[in-house]
Each structure stands twice: as structure tokens, then as C-alpha cells.
Length: 124
Image (cartoon, rainbow, N blue to C red; front, side, top):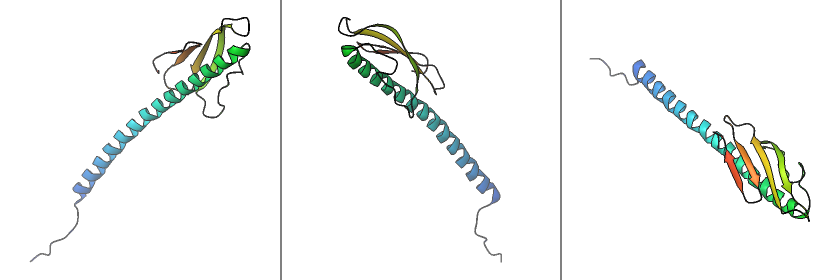
């Protein structure tokens, strides 16, 4: 009589390793898209902060490129330019800023005004 050998065959182990590899690749792909969505959300939050700062600055004086402020660390706002502004005591309180995103795989641009923010681009 032969003794029953306990254990897994080589085929069974290879199948399990292949299944684990497939599941790991699916998880990594979904994490990659989640990171990109988090970067876009961070860019949008920073743009809204710039809009709030610009509204406050426009109430009292002209907006400068350093006045609304962009957080230095983990910033996805590449640059923002002042296109048009009527600020200060004699102005109507209107302005237009344009912010572009950096660190994103697709383009995203925000047009910031006193009334709100409009996002354009394939990454927004």
C-alpha cells in the first residue's frame, strides 16, 4: 500500500500564483487612477483657495501674483496669471485669473473670477 502524500502539486501552485498576479495588477491599475483623481481634487481645492484669497485682496487693493497665495508644498497649481482686474477702492471688484495644473497626466486649466471658477481641459 502506498502512503498518501499530502501537499499541493506544481500545477496548483502555479495557478494560485497566476491568480494572485492578476488580482495585484487590477488593484495597481485602480490605485493609479485614484491617485490621479486625488491630484485633480487637490488642484481644484487650491484654485478655490486662490479665488477666495483674490476676492479678499480685490476688496482692498490690486491683486498681485503673490497676494492670493498658493501653498508651496504639494501644490498642483503651476502658474496663475492676472488677465484683467478692476480692484481696489475705485474698481468694480472684478478680476480674471488663469491657473494651469502641473503634475497631472492630462491638461487642466481654471479660469478664476470674482463670481466663480470654470475648469477646462481633459483632466478636469
